[in-house]
Structure formats: structure tokens, C-alpha cells
Image (cartoon, rainbow, N blue to C red; front, side):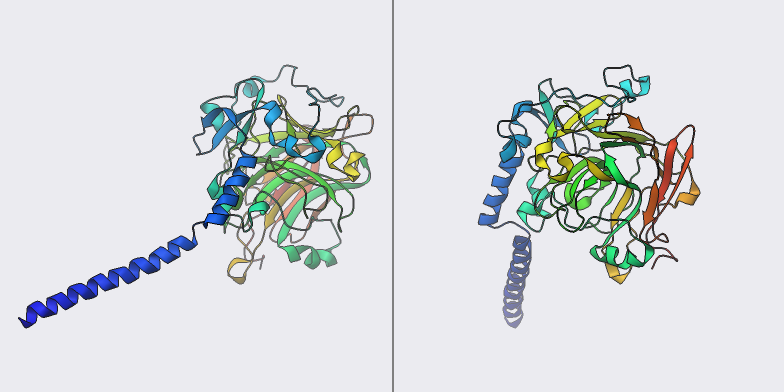
Length: 417
């Protein structure tokens, strides 16, 4: 009798304990889920970003690429572009290869993005990486998804490094200033750097800059990046960015706000790049050209020798409506100092410039565009790195690569605190 009574007590105790455990877990789980009001705001935001698709392609990396009518793309939500007439053909700089000209067989047969392996978008549409609820939830604030929040780097003497590093962003770049510039070009070695924590990123890009670094900076940017917070993975992806107020309110990555007008039906901005370089193995790169059309004044982007992606209308900008006053090429990482020490997030290949080809990442064939729309070899190129013991840069010139530099590094090491 006593034993049976004890068993009942133990059963009730077990049931009570299970209720407590499930209650705690349920509350913890519910904190990770959006509330009704937040869920509604997320859905409204997704509705603005994800336009109706003519076709949807499921990429091997998990992305969904939506084929959206050219006239229905996000760009035309911008107040300045409501009645915009799409410019379909730019005036190319003299000395660059046009997409209509023959390109080498490798590029003709190549599939520079993973989703190309399973489908393509029809003419009259553009491919857009679909934004998901999970993407938005990774942002602290819904409207902040797809935006940068930091002060840009202005190369300065060594005694200013501490000031520049306060925002947690570190760079290894080559740059030019002191003149008016109308475009820039580079071939960029493509890698998949390790990211230590998800709120950090590593990118390699070129910058087209004008205005004051203290508040009204205009910037156009393009390259490749690894950003777990933005994309939810560690894939190497093609990206663009723009701002006309030093990243304060305007602009965004890719097509995550209105602004950039895409005309290409072949390249999805924000999609995974393939293939990727390997240490002491095969090397792969992408070529990016950004230039100002001398007739319409818009800033165009070409990817490789085959793909003209589209343009940033000049009406988006104040200072860049005329020309750029600085050009930059190179790498950038976020150092959030996890665990109270420098991050081990890699820049480029994760190896220093001294290791050279096949081991260190490079930018080659650097060129600029002048006021007459001619391609020019850079003159007066300088380099800058806040902390060369963490990430460094070394430039050079030869007949094959023209103006080039190696850059990058491992971050945390015995010489990088």
C-alpha cells in the first residue's frame, strides 16, 4: 500500500517536472519567434522587397532566385525614379571590351553563379535573390536589414589608426585621390575567408567616392563578400552597395532597397559566386568595372567582359552626380573583438601579401576612367592598412597584370593582438 502511494507521488512529481521544463523551453523558444505585430511588419517588408515573379529558380545553395519583370524591380519604388525611363545601353569607356564583342571560351561556357546550373531567367526579366523571414530576423531592426552602419575609411597617417579602428572595421587598400575620376576597374581574386562570429563580415571590393567623410559622403561599391548576418551562410557572394549620406539613412546592399536599376537577366546581385580559389591550387577571379556614362550621367556596372548589370541613376547622388574625388580597391573586415581579443576573421585568402600568387589574394589590372571616357593606368597609387600585423597590402606593377597588389591576412596571430 505504501509503495503504491509512493509511486503515485513519483508519477505526479515527474509530470509536474515535465510541465515546468516544457514551460521554460516554450518561453525560451517563443522569445526567438516574432510577435504578431513584428511578424506583420516583417511580412509587409518582405512584400515590398520580393516583387511578383514570372519564374522562380531553386539554387543548389538554398537560395530562391525570382525572375521579376524589368519594369517591376525594386528600383522604381524610389521617389526620384517613379517615372524613370530605363537606359538599356551605356556608352562604354574607350579601351575596354564591350559585351557584344567576342569573349574567351571560358567565359562563354562559364557559370559564374551557382543558380546558373539549374535554370535561367527569360528575357525582359531580372534575377533577384528572394529575401526570407529568416533574413529579416537576423537584423536588430527590420528596416536596418541590408544596410551598413559604420564610418567609411579615409586613409590617414599611422597616428590616426586608433581613431579609424574605433568602429571595428579594418582595411587593407590601395587608393587614389586629388583629381576627378569617372570610373574604376579591377580583377579581384575570389576566396571564401573564415568568419569567426556571425555579426562580422569579410569583403573585397572597389569604392567610388565623393564628398565629405564626416557626413555627406557619396559611395558606390561592388565586389564579393562573406556575410553570415546578411545572407545566413558563409558563401562568397557578389554584392553592390550605395549611399549618399555616409551610410546614415540612404542606400543598401544589392537590391534590398530602391535605387540600383538592373537590366541584366543573367546575373543575380547577392547570389553565390562559383568556383572559388584554393590555397596552392586553382585560382579564380572576377572583373568589375564601374563608370559614369558621359551622356546620361548614370554610374554603370559591368561584371566580367560579358555582363552589363545596370546602373545607379545620377539623381540618387549629390557629389557623385558630377564625378568621384577618390577611388579605393581592397579588403575590409569587421573586428568585433570576440572574447576580448582581435578577431580571427580572415581577409582575402587569410594569408599575408608576402606569400604571393596562389596563396595570398590579389587585385590585378587596376584601371581608372578619365573625363574623356578613356581607360587609364593609375598614377600616384598609395596603400593603407590600419594594422598591417593583422591585414596588410603590397602593390606592384608588371606587364601581365599591370598595376596590382596582394592584400589580406589571418587577423588574430602572435603579432596581431
